[in-house]
Length: 313
Image (cartoon, rainbow, N blue to C red; front, side, top):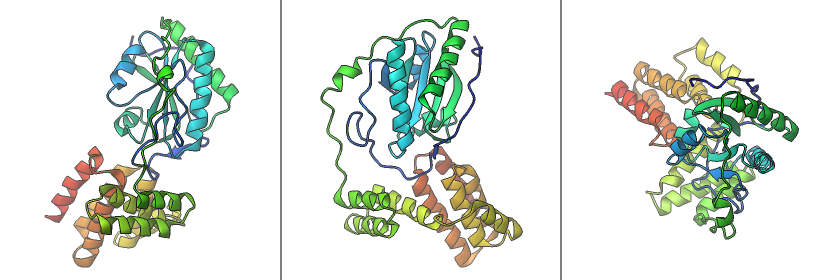
C-alpha cells in the first residue's frame, strides 16, 4: 500500500512554538518536574534508535506521534489529552511521544517546524494532523478520522499495553544542572537575558571547554539580538542594499529563529564572498556563533562549515 486513503485532517498551528527556540541540554525524565507525565497504558516514548520499530508497528495498528519540547507548555497539554484519549480507545491506536529537540533527525523526517506537532503513521506513511494547541473535542474528531482511514486500509490491530507504564512508579531523579547553568535558565525564564549572559560567561571562565555554556551563550545572544526585530523591515533593508552587512546579519538571525536554517547560512556565506577585512571577520564570527546555536553535529551546520571554508580560502 503506497498511501493510506480516507479523510485528511486539516493543519492547525495555534500555540505552536518554533523548534529553533532555546533548548535545555537535558530533557527531564517523564513523570519528573519539567517533563511529560509518566506514560499511560497505550503511550510509549520514542527516540531516534527506536523510531524504526514505531514505523513497523504502524502496519498493525495506527500510531499517533506527538513531537514535543520541554520548553513548550502546549506540548504537555496536547500530550496529556492524547494519552487520555489513547486510554479511552483501549489500544485501537498507540501514542508515541518524541522529544523534537533531543531527536532533531526524527523531527526533520516529519518535516516538523514547530512543537507540538501531531502526525499519524499508517502502514509506514505519515499523515499530518495538527500543530500547536488544539481543543480536546476537536482532537477526538481528528482521531476518529484517523481510525476511519486505518480501517479503510485494513489496519485494524490493537496495540498491547505499554510495559513502561508500570516502570514509571519510581521515576529517575531529574538530572541537576551545574549552578551557573541553572542560574542562566532561571534568568531566561524571567526574561533577564543580561543575567543569563553573565552566568554563561562565568561558566566559560571557570571551564573554557564547557560546550553547553558556549551554546547557551550563543542562543541567548540570538534571543537578545532579535528581541525587538521585525522580519519584514529587516528583509526590506537587506533587499534594498545587499552590501549592508548589518542588514544581512539581522535577516540571518531572524531566519535561524524562524527555522530557516539553510537560508540563513547561505545568506551569510554569500556575504563572506562579497566582503573583506573587518566586515568579513564580523560575518565569519556570526556564522560560527549561529553554528553553536544549531549544534555542531547538525548536518546543516556541517554543510555550512564546508561552504564557509570554501568562501574564506
